[in-house]
Image 1 (tube, rainbow, N blue to C red):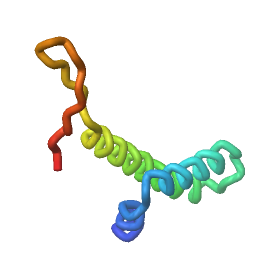
Image 2: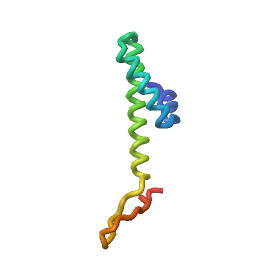
Image 3: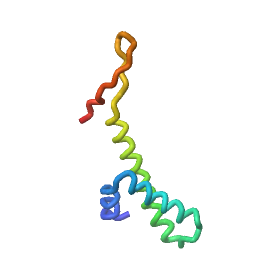
Image 4: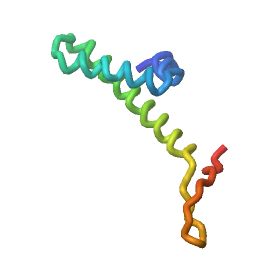
Length: 82
């Protein structure tokens, strides 16, 4: 996969990347794509999957964590990752 294609993926939002990945999966599952194109779009799909996983990991790290106080009460505390 070219550097341009990877850079293009890095600019996509999670939702955009997921939508494109779903399109690729449908194309591959249809069995109507030529072999060379299948390989090419499979590679892009793998890069899109990795991009989506990275976005999800980033989001998880930003989510507030639940902290249990000494008295047993639960409170929200910023994850402090900024």
